[in-house]
Image (cartoon, rainbow, N blue to C red; front, side, top):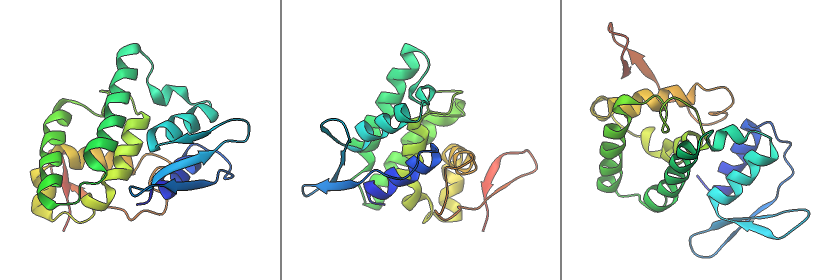
Length: 176
């Protein structure tokens, strides 16, 4: 998904009125936002953090110093590790690592929903939607997290829903 489309989804999920115009620069199509009263902002995570502040939802950036650092870490991970990686092997390595990380967490920062969850969801959507049932089962923690995020109010919007089912133990399993 192009960064401009992703930022428009984020704007809508934050309850901001659409009005921002995005352009892209360079070979990697890095998003640029021209603000009304200042310099342009460049980069997905910079613009996303700006939108969160504009919406007065700073809690999405983390509530403690540690949580803010973890959010920043995952925003960097999104841009450096997920964007630009499209080989199946790269994605499976990322999903394997993320699956281990999420083993004891509800959200990327632990127990609080943040901008990191939103942007990682948007960044991984195109890959998760193509996973087979067996692959979803292999990455059970990622599947649980992804299912949880896509049902968070206002996040998924027009993106296709990835279907998951629960087994008798209440664990999220992908459906066929």
